[in-house]
Amino acid sequence: MCYTDSDEELWQEDPYEYIRMKFDVFEDFISPTTAAQTLLFTACNKRKEVLQKSMGFCYQILTDPACDPRKKDGALHMIGSLAEILLKRKIYKDQMEFMLQNHVFPLFRSELGYMRARACWVLHYFCEVKFKIDQNLQTALELTRLCLINDNEMPVKVEAAIALQVLISNQEKAKDYITPHIRPVMQALLHIVRVTENDDLTNVIQKMICEYSEEVTPIAVEMTQHLALTFNQVIQTGPDEEGGDDKAVTAMGILNTIDTLLSVVEDHKEITQQLEGICLQVIGTVLQQHVLEFYEEILSLAHSLTCQQVSPQMWQLLPLVYEVFQQDGFDYFTGNKSVTVVQLI
Image (tube, rainbow, N blue to C red; front, side):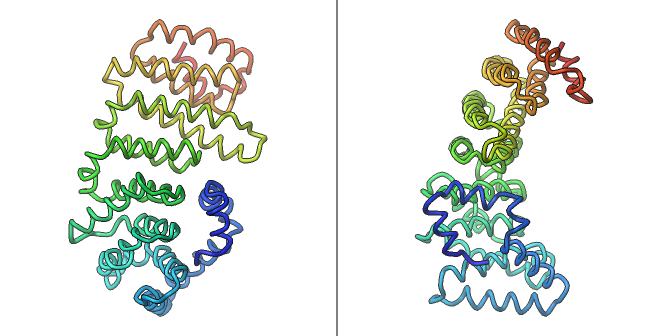
């Protein structure tokens, strides 16, 4: 469960492949790291003495100033993997805030990128900690936010993005603290999605939009433009090319994120009108290229843009939808898809 030489080699040579590997659900089936996590969790959940000994082992490593950083990474990996158990047992959950304050927060200043990434990862898994000291929550949020915006290592930024979102979702006081910073945070998230094409981050953006709907409204056009460009970039990879399936999932996430933005600004007519043109380009690209796997998502966009009124611009879409409907066959448009087409027409 420690950071390895092969991890370091991949991080340095191809950090984007490192990110893909770490977030690939299919890698989990063959990963010895995942197997070790599962074994540790099961043993500690079934045998009380194993949990006590494991935590003692980890504490010994964390409190040794001369310990190899990779061993500390492994110890924190163990503790984070046991978060679900630790937060349910009073003897441990009352100590977790202290653990974060003394052994995780200092790692954000580490010169080692993998240690900063691990610090973000631990905050992610302990996002439900009941902070007794507000300053500790603010510190966790600020350190994570700064990692997201300023860190030079992309794997660190990805971990920070996920950690920040789950902290905001699970800590009642977190939302207000991040509100003044929401614009640079969203810009950073959009940039990371663009360069990594990671589908986990499209989910992060969707949840952040829902949390900060009022704050996001003024930058909705800018965000949608960015997402549209990223979508066009992602679909340049065909489904048969390497990574095509992952990119398809990312593309669907982007379309769903745009739809979420449309729902947020539905009461702002001027903004919705500006989004129409951007969305029409995306819809047109999918329909003209006959990318069937995205039909449901782009028809949902079309429905969102026409459910209250149909602008002259949107009427131009009808012949194209009809042509695609005729060409790709009625068999494809089943269930909800056929309903969407009928509503649009």
